[in-house]
Image (cartoon, helix red, strand yellow):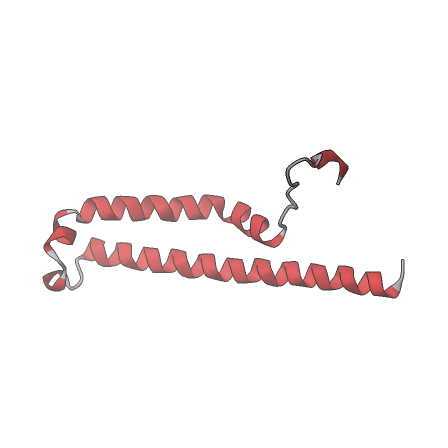
Length: 99
């Protein structure tokens, strides 16, 4: 294997690691934000400033946000792998088994 091919493979591997790391950080930031919103709703912080519809549907909003957090936690490995290792899709008229 030539030196140029090795460098390309190493660069691709480093790019994948960087993409995976960026995706992890983004998912962590999103999950932390959603948990912070849930905690504000649970402890009713600043309830006097909330719109009436948030006060009325507080438990439903908490349930939906909790479901989204659990969903993201369970699917985070799949999301990270999907972003860092994209698959090449075959176009129309191409046999996917033959590259």
